[in-house]
Each structure stands twice: as structure tokens, then as C-alpha cells.
Image (cartoon, rainbow, N blue to C red):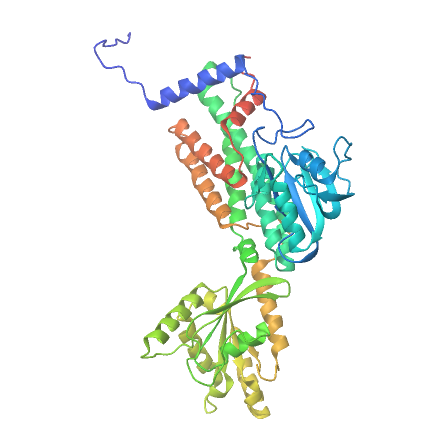
Length: 526
């Protein structure tokens, strides 16, 4: 039986059909005639990768930080860098050896006054930090010298002061650094502890970027296979099993990304600091403990209950790991509206803490009853929960042990030994410093466990935005599995969105790369 078409019926074209037609036409057009890329004049005197358009301005800035110092470094980047060296270091018409320090008199280009005598270096592009022609002036670090040199550079035509982060931005735009490497460089500059330095240096060296680039490359390949199958499978130009191979690769990628996400926020904690909160009743010695750990009077200490009414926060280095230590208001019911607000903020900080130091006054433990039930009740009041996981993350600090007799100490330690599955308990005296070393060792182990070793295993997630984009990536890739049997075009859109999420982390993604893989992996029209 022949099919009969009613010519009077409306002719309907779906959006998917339009998309497939456009895609197929684009692929055929690119296959038959690939246009060469537009020619751009480079911002460097040597050949190599383009650092941008030729009309970009030359920038300069003090790179060594402000304040008096022995040597200050002024950095220049852009097409006028060589002009700056010629006019200010008396090197006109002289060959400049690259990356070689030359001792020269540095002069004002307008008045010819000698401003200083220092070292100058020439970095021809693209072999420089930014990929552009660059120069450095190593001068004496006095404020007057630095100011005079910066003013002289500003008088050179085509030069202006750099904006914050502009040198690194140009390096990123020139392909010298990936976005994760840029973030690692920023973390390295701001690193305050040894562990932060190690993590930042590993990220800046490209470990995290290479992991994400590998995932991106594999996902591009999967998307190229799926798109080719959609457009050319009816013509029998695509090998069998291509779709199954893409499905397996996407499943493996989802598993790898999910394992990467299950890191208990170690990298983020190491980057921003482990949040340790000191909590407890009034006059337990919380502020004294804060001052003891800081080795300075960071908080006011007095015998008056309720002295601390707000959160007092300070940053510490505990065994090479960053800690953000917070002292909080004493937990009690109070008619004072200000103190009630302090108690509310204290409980909020306890809920957000990575580690809670529950400070207890040893003298306040009743001598006529067992100490363990008293401490268990006190923990429930401070933590406002009976969740074992929350209790495990706290350390009970029994303060003012110097006020206990030897007999009372022995009795307390004996009773604590009978505590089934207790949290960590440390006896200390902020007055005599007794027991403080054992407490610091316990705190260091807690912080080290929460941060992990930045040099072992795979690279760590360090940014909240990385986590958000990776979660979006996994969610988008799951769309492929939901629609692969019903609507392959919709399934491919999920892969494309996953690729976009990865590209937002690395800063590099584009449709041209998908077409490149199609032509590389498939002989369409074979």
C-alpha cells in the first residue's frame, strides 16, 4: 500500500530538524572550505603565539610590593617596553641580550635627570610572563626613587599604570596560564602557611588544570562522536559502536568527577583556613585560651561573667596549617538583649565550625557526682545536638587544672577513662600553661586530618566555584543517560552543557574544537 500525503495538511518542521540541518550544513561547509584565521599583528618583536591585538597599551607597575625595601622591581609589559628601556636606560640602538641583567643609570626621558642606578632586564615576547615584550627595572626601594621611576614611565608615549591583576590577565589571554593556574598563582601570593604554599604551588604548576583539561578533551571527543552519529549515521558513514563507546566514556567521567567531589572540602579548607570555634559557659576561660593560642591579648579577659559579647576572630598557623580561631560569647540565658544576640551568634558559629573547642571550668565539675554524665550534658547544651558526627568533631578542654588538687586530678582522669566513645579531652591551664603542648598536638592532628596532605594523591578542589561547576557538569551528563534512547539531540545537549561547565573552570572551550575532532576522528564521505 502506498502512503498518501494530504497536500492541504500543514507542513511542520521541528526545532530538532532545523538544528540538525544547520549543523550538517556547517560541517560540510567547513570540510570543503576552511577559511584561514584572521591575521593579527603580534605584540612582540619575535614570532610566536599572539599576545593580543596591536593597539593594546603598554602597562607598568611596582611588582615587589609597597613600603621601604632594599630592592624594588618595576615591571613593564607591552609594545612600548623596548622604548622604555631605550629612553630610560640609555640603550638606544644597542643590542639587548634577553633575560640578562645590565647595570645602568636610569634617567627621566624628558629632563634627562638621573633617577637611580640599577639593573634592567629585557624579556622579548613571546618568551615572557605575559607573552608580550616585557622589561624590568630593579631599583632601590625607597619611596622617592620608586615614585620618580613610575612617573618617568608614565611620561613615555603609549604607557599607562597597570590595573590590579592585569599582568596575570594578559598572561591568561596569551595562553601562558590557564584559569586554574592563575588562581593557583593568586593563592601562592596570599599563602601564609607551609601547607597553603604547597597546595598553591602544585595548582600553579598545572596539576589541577591538566586534570580538568583531560576531562574536557574526553568530553569533547564524546560530543563529537554523538554529533557525528546524529548527522551522518543514516548515510552509513559512521562506524558501528561509536555511540556505545561515548556512553561508556561518559559513565567513566561521571564516576571520576564524583570521586573528585567527595574530598570533604579538604582543599577549600586548606585555602581559606579550618574554622575552629571556642565555645562554652561564661567564665570558663574561653578568652584566656584564645589569648594563649594567639600569644597576645586578642580578647578582653575579666572575672565578670559575659565579658565577651561578640565573636572575636583571629588567624593562626598550627603546625603549617591555617586556622581561623573564633572566641564566642558564653552560653547562658540572659535578660540583656545585647548578650542574647552574642549567644545567638555563638551558636551559629558552633553549627558552622569544622572543630569546636568546648571549654569547661574544672572547678565547676561537681565533686559529689561522676564527671562523665556532667560533661555529656554540658556537651549537649553547647552543641545543641546529639549527632555523633558533630560530637566527634569537638575537643573538650578542661581548663584551670592548676586549681585542682592532685587527688582531684587523679579522680577526674580515672572517671574520664571510663567514658565510652568519648570525644577528645584535654586538661590544660591557661595560667600555668600546663597541658598546653598536648592540647596543641591534638588540635594539630585534627587540623591536619581536615586539610589532608596537599602533595599526596590527586590535586584537590580549592575553589567553591570549581565545586559548583563540577556539580553542574555531573547533572548535565546525567541528562545524556536520561534521553539517549528517546531523543539523542537532547542527550547531546546535556553533554554540551557538561562541557561548558568544565570550560568555565579552565577558561577554555569553543565549538570550533568540536568540529576539529569530528574531522580528525571521522573520515566523513569515505
